[in-house]
Length: 105
Image (tube, rainbow, N blue to C red; front, side, top):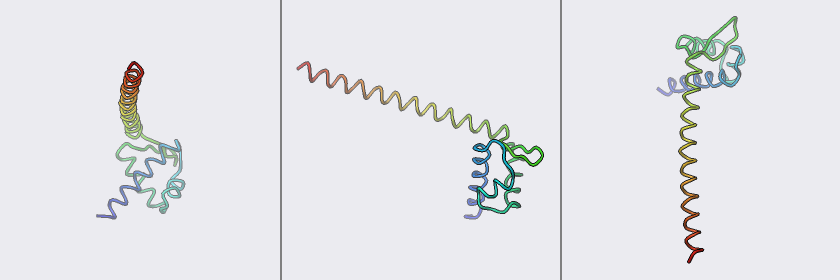
């Protein structure tokens, strides 16, 4: 079980590397993750089969599903940031009312 989780984490590392690099090679992915080129090839092939990566003449890049995942992650982050900003605004308003009330006494 732990080996499967480790493999899954390394596949995610490969996906992250593709997203960060734009265009890369199997060897660069292998070096980044710390695995053999053959193992990197298996992970990249899995990402390719699932649509998370594309390969053109030995150059690997993010696939359509990889981009969709990235955009969904960013949208989720934007929603959280907007919520946090609202919380900050509400807190500032509360503090302003509290200070104003104290000063008016």
